[in-house]
Amino acid sequence: MGLLIIDQEKCKKDGICTKECPMAIIRLQEPEGYPELIPGAEPFCIQCGHCVAVCPHGALSHAQVPVENCPPIDKDFSISEEQAVQFLRSRRSIRFFKDRPVEKERIQELIEVARYAPTASNAQVVEWLVFTDRAKIKKLAGLAVDWMRSVLQINPLPAQATYLPMIVGAWDAGYDVVLREAPALIVASAPKSDLNGLVDVTLALSYLELAAVAKGLGTCWAGLVQGAILSSQPLKNALGLPEGHTHHYPMMLGYPKPKYFRLPERRVPKITWG
Image (cartoon, rainbow, N blue to C red; front, side, top):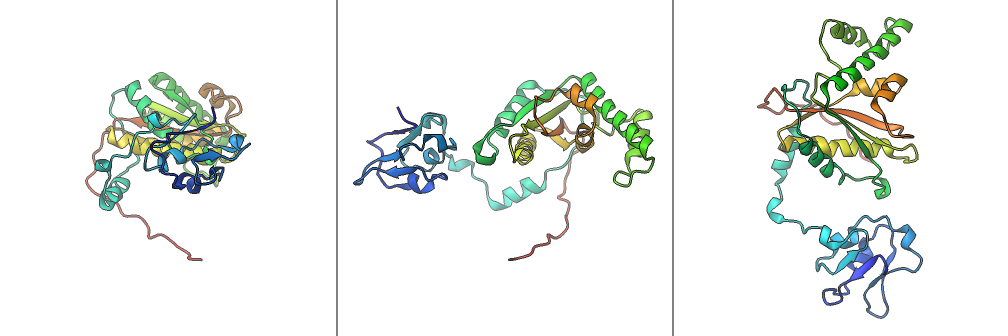
């Protein structure tokens, strides 16, 4: 059996799937036949499922993306432009969390949503590390602070990070401004072989943080830890990143303490039209 499965009773032979295939490897059999893969083209299929999704008749299935696993789009769930803008503008970086653990089931659900984020060539190679042990998360923050101390020993006033003394000082005073005592830490990563790995990781985390809002959760990109991961071998070891995963970024997760009632303004975009 090939990759494409055609329900001949439903297929209208309209060629919509042939036009949509991003790899241009689907054709109609002649004359006026059913869709089929071009001979020898199977290795070039990226299993994106566009052929399944674009057929208005539900006539096409894919061996790796079966139509029964691809639910129809429910128009009742569509949101207006105004709703979309408010939803996106109301996302906030959360730096103060309730002293409440995040259920593993909820984290699992968020990652399940994040796997639908676009990846280059539909490679889908993003992997996830999840930490919910508060002591472990505290240790990771401490290792990041240790790295900051080492940087300050070399240069007490680093030009690129003048805030490091403040962060270390806050830590010594008992305040964690590195991971904000978040009840959960999620690290998305991708292998070095994925040339667009950091982009894929970023998109996956963006999906996750937007989905988190609907579950009453808040997130914050852990840039201080990311900076430390790039240079601190002890922190890398403690994280346990998969072998060869040079693309990575951590994100804090928890139930937010603050509530927001307005949409802060941002700078007017600088646009150059070509």
